Image 1 (cartoon, helix red, strand yellow):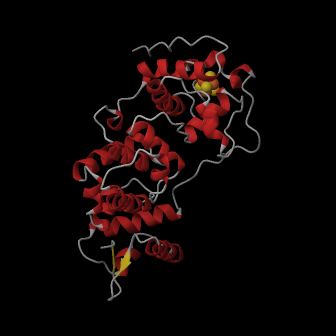
Image 2 (image 1 turned 180 degrees about the horizontal axis):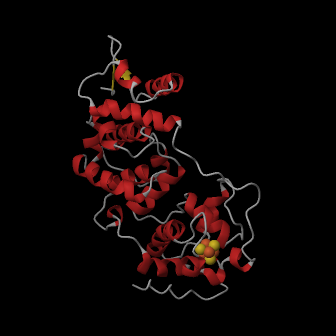
Length: 303
Ligand code: SF4
């Protein structure tokens, strides 16, 4: 089957909010149908999705998010869960400290906000595990507030589209103002713009080989107009996973997730041959509160 024709590009010479308007128009036809974007999604569900999506692709997050929300539909539900259940439900999403942090966030929401998710960015940022990005994403996508929402994808889009650079600079305070300067004046469209910019970075203006021929704002893109200059400095190396401490930690946790009672050290020894690396990873899991040692020297998920 022929692939669909790329969308007609917006006119050349757009700047500021006119660029944001063009992205909102493009998003109306290009948006992925993701469950946390549906109109009936509440701010708690958005918060859960944002924490899961940090460093983890949509395809892996979606089934875990669905199961998680079915089990713990409110912050109060999650606050009452055991750490072990939360780590088990996190499954293979990676960076499992996020699971414990999310539970801590739920406890704080119950204690400080009667279980609801505040709309105020400052109150959101005061929650454990909620930073600049997540606070604005929840205020914007969960509460419908126009907010500049700046993740890695958006910084890359702005670097190319506005500044004519192949890559984003390291995160800086000015990123928020850069993105706010592109937002449409209408509040509803400004909210749509925030998610549209993220979508463009995820689907079209991707890190390697941007799909400029499919880009709705290609005629106004500073990087394209400058002749697509190469990035400064050395190319970034792709992070490997095999053999890393992350892989070892994941294997150790797999054993404990599957066990219904504490396991002896010998059961953990079998998952990784390098004793020094295995021991280092087990120590780090203990330090992170993801694993506990029982008085008789066995290991278990935290109770
Ligand atoms: S034209 Fe290419 S580089 Fe410019 S914003 Fe679109 S996808 Fe990104």
